[in-house]
Amino acid sequence: MLAKLKMSTTKRNLLVDLLIVSGFLLAMQRHLTGLTLHELLGVALGVGFLTHVLLHWRWVYETTRRLFSKAKAQARINYVLNLGLLTAFTLIIFSGFMISEEVLPMIGLEGVRGGSWKWLHTASADAVVWLVALHIALHWKWILNAGKKYLFGWLSQRRKTAVISPETAVVNSSEVTI
Ligand code: HEM
Image 1 (cartoon, rainbow, N blue to C red):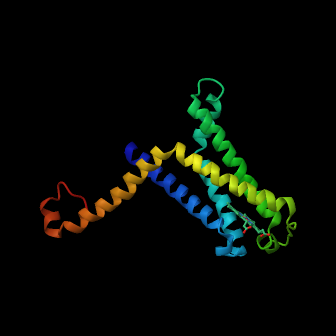
Image 2: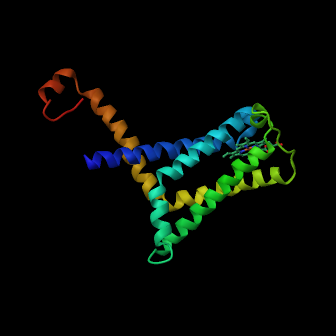
Image 3: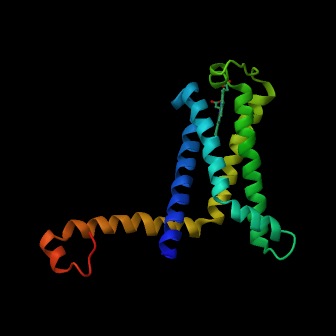
């Protein structure tokens, strides 16, 4: 029961992470999305990122508590990296709102034009690309394991279901769950 609960938590985290990464990659291609979609996607990403942090609040709490006592070097690096990601992501969303030309007018407000806010917006987006690359490098084992378990597990389950005929399934009903 507990294992089942744990697996579904991993699945949920993996799904949220995949959605954030895909959304981020799309948001980086402003010429493809157009400005309205870019801004709306950015707002959704802000909500997604907040969800991600809330889903990992226990990690944030435990690591912060242990950081100045018995934490290993890897945990400290991880923590600093995640703090950088949180800062950069918050800056993207905040500066995005400051230069907004579509979302802010929808609620009757007006953003500022260009200048340093625009620079900050692009610079923090570039910083996130580098930080995410490091984040993935640090968590590659988790990503690989979760990917193997869910993607390949799902594919082989489909293959098994496809080759088992209804009669076989009845004969082996004690072993096979369809
Ligand atoms: C994770 C979320 C976001 C990412 C990765 C992102 C990334 C970028 C990048 C890389 C550019 C520069 C594109 C270029 O020069 O061609 C840009 C431009 C822009 N972004 Fe975002 N952005 C995000 C969220 C937002 C949000 C939430 C808003 C507003 C609500 C916003 C508003 C804008 C605007 C108005 C521009 C155009 C600036 C201009 O060309 O004058 N962005 N964004």
